[in-house]
Length: 130
Image (cartoon, rainbow, N blue to C red; front, side, top):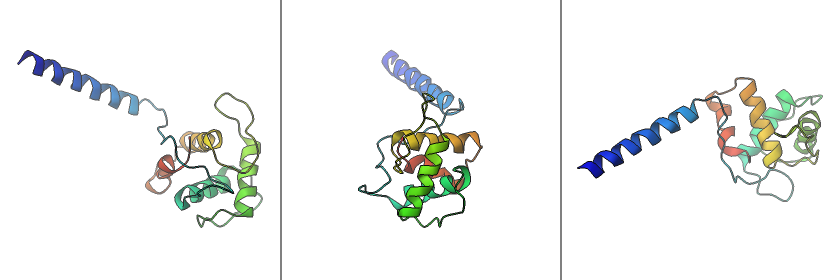
């Protein structure tokens, strides 16, 4: 009986800690997602997120089609985004047109900072590498 109460208490503390962490204002993203760029799998949902974020926050001179397909315009728009942003260590991003963990984290950070947490672009949290 005492062991069961101890397990229940530990579970309750663990859940309380998780809910506190989840509501602490930090962005939670899926780690290990495939990169976006030439030579990579290019999951359409991740490409579409990268296209949207590049359109809105990247300083691209004209909107690109958000169709989930990686091509030259998407590569260029991502490069423009990368030239304007820094990584979590405040170092400039490499402007290679590839969304890996550093660029993915920067993209998620601008969504978080802008308060964008709606259902459509909330999917980006699970799609972009970080």
